Length: 364
Ligand SMILES: NC(=O)c1ccc[n+]([C@@H]2O[C@H](COP(=O)([O-])OP(=O)(O)OC[C@H]3O[C@@H](n4cnc5c(N)ncnc54)[C@H](O)[C@@H]3O)[C@@H](O)[C@H]2O)c1
Image (cartoon, protein in one colour):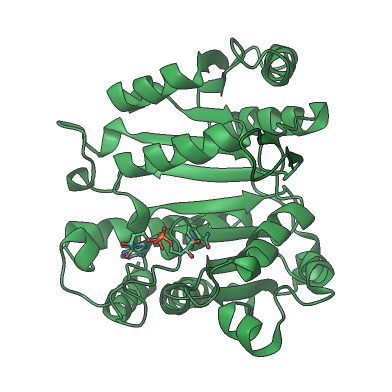
């Protein structure tokens, strides 16, 4: 992530982190991540303040409240970042609280970058034969506020044999430009070589024609960066065949949702996948990719790596690169020494792994 000067920390004030653990295993992995962040930042004397919010299914079922009134403004004005766990509870089949809270924050805080790093931390995690850590390291940037996910559409003759359902793909020039530009700026800031923009402009001749034209304009501003275009179906094949050929992939909301799950699986899947929902310079949200995992919730066996790696992304966003690197190293070393939960073939519990990581970052 490029470093940002956060407005809330002017004058040496503490960075303020809102912690929304949410539901299910969100409530188990998030405290472990906070423990590891505290250990890494205390050693380096970084001022950090955590404020916990109990938003989630329990509150919704008790009080009927999802995202409380004024919450978005408070997070926007008083916090630097949000550490998020997961939302989803079988007692709320509509998933209303999750939609209001998580999608509400993504849209209302205008978190237009969904950043999904894809890094192989141990070769045994990849299903690809013969690949090692040096072969898989790339970043997927998914547009996070537009596209097919804005909820514009409707039914005609619903429930009849003649039913028609429409779902509009909404792409603004501003929205397309800012996510493509973010991808180039990331490449520049991190000394990388290439941006690959992916769309389906051969079939989606209006929406993705706009992506093509904006890509052409923005790429012209970065002559030193290799610019590449692949249709999304070709990208899906290429990224499995040879992930090492990519530095940064940028694409629309729907394609990014799918391709980033595919790439996550190349490096170990849900338990180790982090993500950031970012608006540069503003309060941004960091979370593991996994959900609330009701099937293992409450058993103390959830893997905290995704949440710890998301915390590393958050620290990097706050400008604390050294701490971010230490968190990454802690997970990498735990994998090497097999200090892992059952999903990765180990026998450790969530808290045991969290304690081990905290001790590692204190020593590092
Ligand atoms: N960002 C979010 O908050 C988010 C994301 C995805 C799903 N959800 C919600 O979570 C609920 C469950 O969804 P799901 O079952 O499809 O997806 P899930 O990610 O919760 O679980 C899928 C599978 O992966 C396992 N798993 C996930 N995270 C793990 C971890 N850290 N350690 C070990 N195993 C882990 C689970 O046990 C389960 O078998 C649903 O309500 C869904 O809507 C929320």
